[in-house]
Image (tube, rainbow, N blue to C red; front, top):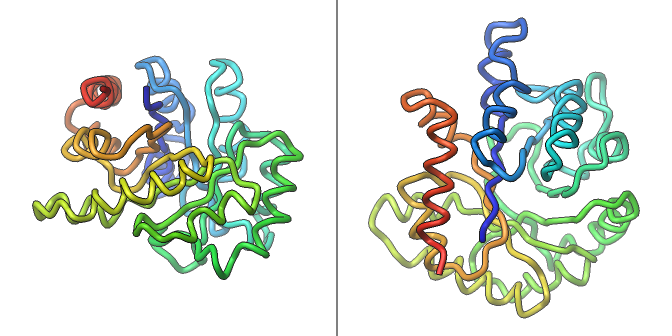
Length: 252
């Protein structure tokens, strides 16, 4: 069954907006795990707009205590700077179960596109090898457009791709089914190349079930913004359990 990894970036955004330590990112992550989530995802950015270096270490200890997956996302090409030691330094320090590489620039509000594998494969290959030498499973962020070049992610040495589901979520809200067909086609191409398929971005309770019923054999979804937004009304524990129900009900 598809695993749920909860992205707790937005908890850190709220904390940072006021300063201090509340809400507590680790406490929130623990609540998600106690509710049944199978992992925690964070995407530390060079500007520390949400998750900070200290959070990365604290959440690694929590995931180790719970024996669940820790998924660290980041741009492998972003250089280190004060307050941000670089993605590879963070991975070397905490050894996440999964490292998800995302081609986001410093100025992006959020991740909004996948890698161009025809262009980026040569640059990605040695970086993937470095992460695998640390014991990380490697996933590469990918556009869900049915691109045949998706199979080149395997040539880079990656284990999985993560489908960028932002366009799907927008299309789903309009009642347009074409985008989910693109996701399914991309997943099949990746799986034929022996790549596992993850998914994330703007997935929510309103669209997750339809996505999982249409896209075969998704191994993991990472969900943060919608889950935290919905938790403001229903509570974090109840919201995580509702997502787990969505996944269960969508299973064949």
